[in-house]
Image (cartoon, rainbow, N blue to C red; front, side):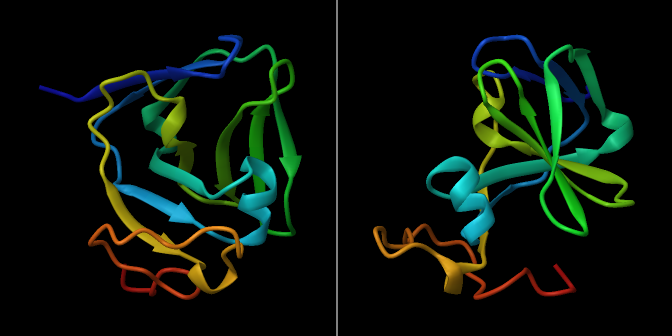
Length: 136
């Protein structure tokens, strides 16, 4: 039986569905993610061909860097997606999924860049000072 998940932005204008397994959640503590979300970015990922946008009228993309873009709802402001240029997969904010999602935390990245107002959780998953190691 294939795993299917659905989700949406806060106002429901952007709706999506995924098929197949979802990657464990990666929590990114870099300054860009912190500025976009207010804390840290917690996202899973799927291959592009496993993401179906059911409603995307208000989906907007912001060029976050020379190598990636971030998708959000232009009506309610919900952060939804992150995609590296040329990548075969797309990251999806874990909080945008309908419950139960079945997601579990898998790792923390860019921990050395975290904000000073919180401590990293002791959740038993790897904590990397920068990006995940190439073998991950």
